[in-house]
Image (cartoon, rainbow, N blue to C red; front, side, top):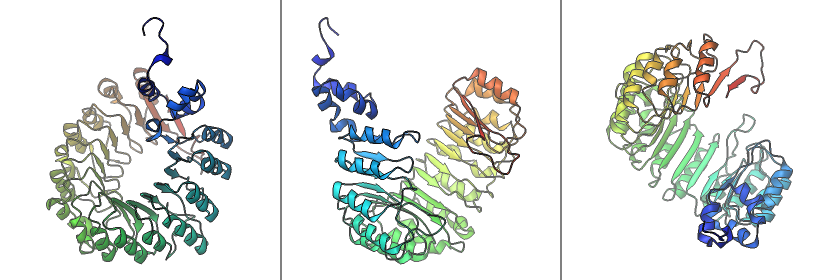
Length: 461
């Protein structure tokens, strides 16, 4: 900076650019107290529009309140644990510009709390809450208040509460009839409310961009989903063991999908699902999750790799019938970055030869509980030189090929080796010496029936 010039001589545009490199905590607790001008610039909407205040779990309620009192421009709040009502009260009183609220699942919604949110944040656009349980009338009143949120675009109602269905029959009706701007609906585990979900899908079918639900899938549900013409993200966890391919065939109409998750597929669905991909309907997929499907097979996976060239995320965890040949053409998905093959117990070291040869952009690989893999698999995996996270839990590794990790995987940040019972600690120590930045996670084998999770993990960091 030229002699005699000070930082206060910078125009607001440059000062604003400097502030973009600071955290919202620094903006709130430090920057705004420098001067009146700095306070005004530090509260510019450009700095807060995409920022989320998500305090660490160890931050006390009193500290959170102090932060909120100094964040009048806050747009998004996300809780990492249950907090007292004082926190929510402070959010309502001091952060009147909030557009997104994500409450921790343990913080069960009440009618009075929802009234407060609607009153103070009529412009709320995103809401993630757990409905009150088990009183039906309270659920209904909360849902009626949610239905009054005319700007609401994204709604998540959580999932299971104490292992019982969360949403009562009739509760989704005021949400379906209200919320005219709703585009993203995430219902969690709803239990037997299929008619209400069909009503919701029917009313929002031309607006919905994403929909997720854990449900007993039926033909009627699938047909209502298929009528959501703008849908880009679909996430379904199926509870119907007898679901047939004919029941879900209508989903083939969703040609604009970018993300498709369908977990716990039946054998008939798995055997016929290749038609979805061969038809070209799902050629735009970026994210695919077919996990927890025992009947995963090689034909299905080859149809995926041959027809989904844009795929970046693939999760087929639990595909216990998948063989090595199912990964033969994985290299055709050259943009693949995240691959979860955990609990695919028939895969051997040879499957990693296909991964190493074709997945050069891979950043995360999970091959936990692939019991037939040995240290030799590492010889192929290290060809994926952009790997950042490698999970090799519950395998019979000894660590004899760890020297290849230090020479080939320079970008690796995390190595998960939990419950590898034959692992030689000497190899771990040697790897840690060569890659001091690498976080190596090794869980001790538990001799007692219960061991505190925080005590069960050893971080060599």
